[in-house]
Length: 145
Image 1: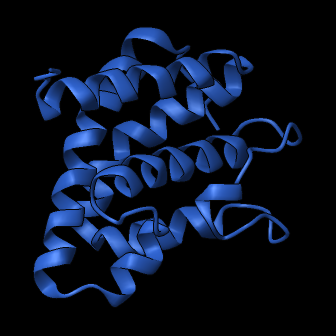
Image 2 (image 1 turned 180 degrees about the horizontal axis):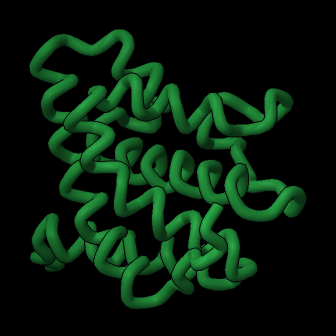
């Protein structure tokens, strides 16, 4: 019987997701690292729904709104790829643990107050692990842009 804690599951999943980004160019790695680090503050300031909507607004308009079919495009590098990865990674984790596979932004828009709090809390807990691994494994964005 597997008796792993939710923290262990978060850690393993976050590690695998950061490894995905590790294969990208330095600019994409650096931007992803930066956006992951700023995500909790953005969520606390604006709320999870507005933060997810902001990430979605940064994607190409022809990209899917649903994280299930979202694949970060090879071009352009940097910003859009980093935002696509972050939205996708949050969606995958929250889809496993809270939304039963539904896109987190759609879930959030239809959630009760309690469901929105649970979703936000889980996003913050997962982001803590993403931040740790991104800091440890990814290149820093030193472009100054």
